[in-house]
Amino acid sequence: MTSRPLRVAALGMGWWSDVLADAAKRSDKIDIVTCFTRSPDKRAAFAAKYGCKADASYDEILADPSIDAVINTTPNNAHLETTRMAAVAGKHAFLDKPIANTVADGVAITDACK
Image 1 (spheres, rainbow, N blue to C red):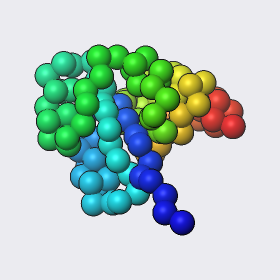
Image 2: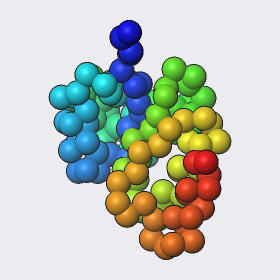
Image 3: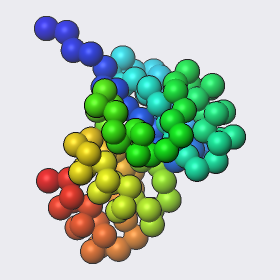
Image 4: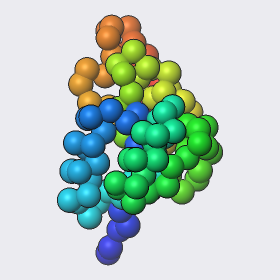
């Protein structure tokens, strides 16, 4: 049985997003198909570098049924809101550490993803 790569969106275009995207490019299990960050210039640069689409909003990504998951590299204080939105949309979410700035937010993220 063969399985297709996980189709993911990159959210947040800081330096760590490049580290994770570089790792994804070395894998046949993950395909970064789109990205979003608030800065149009950063969004366009990331899309050009990694050969993906640049969506105009996070809502576009969440509404796309072909996207399986979100690699969330937004600032830690945005993780709860952005991950909750992904969970509500039925998307898997990857967060690196720390997943939140407080235990309460960490628990809320875990609950949203259950």
